[in-house]
Length: 205
Image 1 (cartoon, rainbow, N blue to C red):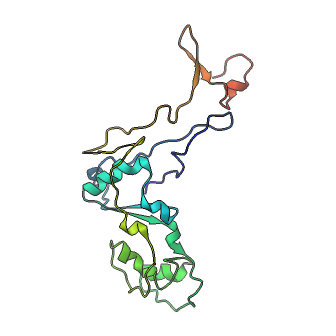
Image 2: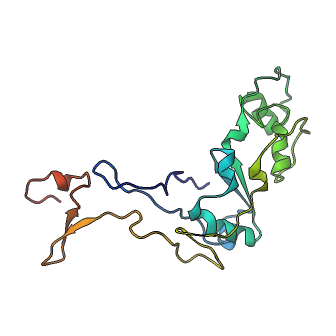
Image 3: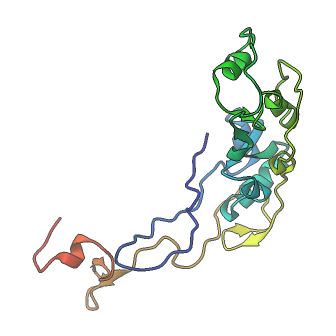
């Protein structure tokens, strides 16, 4: 599992109270590299169904390469899971691990006990232990296919393995004060919120 900050590419405003800690995602750079980790399926998990229509820009090159290399790439939004407020509790067999999860869970795929087992119909990576009696009305993630596009964070034409990623000028950088005569870095620029800005003199290490 690779966990990434959803706001890592957010627009940044330079001020005294905010540090530019944005970053671009670092993932295995080819389908072969993923297979070396025994990965055959890639599931891109996002907060909302609208997020499952297209991956963030800094993932585009990698996901395109994974799909082109034969890996099954799909998306899944967390809001596909919800509590079942309509169906009465049914006695559930605990003969399998999925049944045990179903019996213990308060949320279900598609928001219903009847649609819970449809997960492996939409993502056919394992055989469901029971037939689904319902199916989620909408799930764009199951049909997700990454398409190459040119952005400040993606090349638009990835091939082989990714050697380096595009990124905007000054992305995730820290402006500093440099001594004119020696070129020595003296510290962060004044408007950054750091101990250098609060010092009145002397040396700290």
